[in-house]
Image (cartoon, rainbow, N blue to C red; front, top):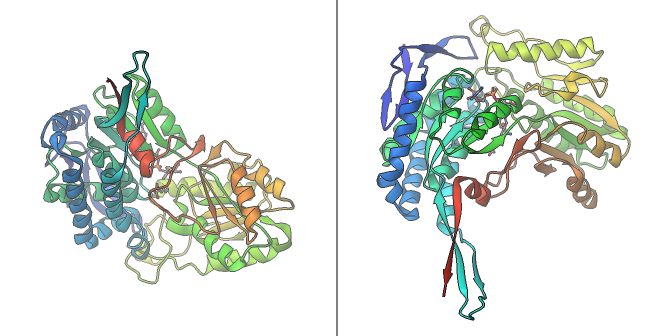
Length: 486
Ligand SMILES: NC(=O)c1ccc[n+]([C@@H]2O[C@H](COP(=O)([O-])OP(=O)(O)OC[C@H]3O[C@@H](n4cnc5c(N)ncnc54)[C@H](O)[C@@H]3O)[C@@H](O)[C@H]2O)c1
Ligand SMILES: O=C/C=C/C=C(\O)C(=O)O
């Protein structure tokens, strides 16, 4: 049986306590392997290794040298594409057709984009007058922040972890990564790639375990970590922020959402249906950017509901290796319990179940998997928990609206503000509405279209800070002003 170990100071090591937990394949419920659970000792060793590595060869490299190594990391992921694909799909159950287009290529791109950005970025300089007439020159230099704690979720494990590790390393930091307990494989495999690419020992460390009272908490409570970058639930973000307050450490938080899709009657309906199908059901609905609330202008409401229903019912439910499948299981049976509790709540609250609402019939060998049906509701009141709370499952509620103002008000009515998708062929309206949506990211006639140079993050309770492009640079470096009297 496979053993999944920590990667600390350039070596794979087990836990001194011998404690392990199970990694389970959510497509069939089968055991993948035993994962070592880090105690304070392993977290401490990882942080010490990361601290020491800042003073080693990594800390002495110039940007071009680091960039070259990070390109080799990206090439290493690409060279072992099938292994990464297999590992990610085992852990998550997601279709290989999806992971091969999104998760793994982005894992590589996250290193290349930030390595290149760092080579080309400029810093500010100001000439100033002084009373003696000689003047002074101010110029800024950037320095790595130090040891970065990276805490990542299970929905896009390699993509979201490297989205942080790529820029953190490009900026010259070292990292201690705590991947989700549900998905330990690709972060571990990346350790091998780092080593082969020539990343010095201690620069990239991985500790496995759970959140509270386990590796996650030990890492966020560790006094020798300089900053934390976290993607996950809003409640967890609050806990991490509290822990980081001790010692005044900076946080970057990418948190939950309950995103709105807004479909105007003047949209291109084919595009709106295709985009909303993806935004509600891709990755079995486990995408923070997904639209669990869809608002449709009344004249096309019935047509939209009918077509989205047909689309949902044409999704092909199946395991990762099935080339025709485009809809996998949820990440775990535990998460399915949560999603199904909302399916029940919708019925209790009087929803019309347009499609789905339960568990699909699966062949015997997949019966132990975390399968659920793609589900669409209409008819719920605006204050039902089904339309106000993040479910993180393959489902959406569709509600009609009559005016642009009403659509904007509905979209902005929740304490979340991560992303939104607007569907209209009226250019003025698109800009007007986009400008008024309270969210960090607004897509017009698209969804999850990503340019890694752009700002990414949430407003309100969906996060603090922005990553992406120069915004990642802002978080992962200290900007120092040098003032020289001439
Ligand atoms: N805004 C974004 O960019 C974004 C992207 C993806 C996912 N998400 C959000 O992530 C959530 C789904 O992911 P999840 O269920 O893995 O989130 P989660 O918050 O349960 O866990 C995320 C990570 O935090 C760790 N953790 C949990 N409790 C902790 C604690 N007390 N101290 C330290 N670490 C702790 C977990 O072990 C895991 O590694 C959803 O809410 C989703 O919206 C947000
Ligand atoms: O589930 C959330 C998806 C987040 C995506 C990104 O962070 C990204 O594309 O960089």
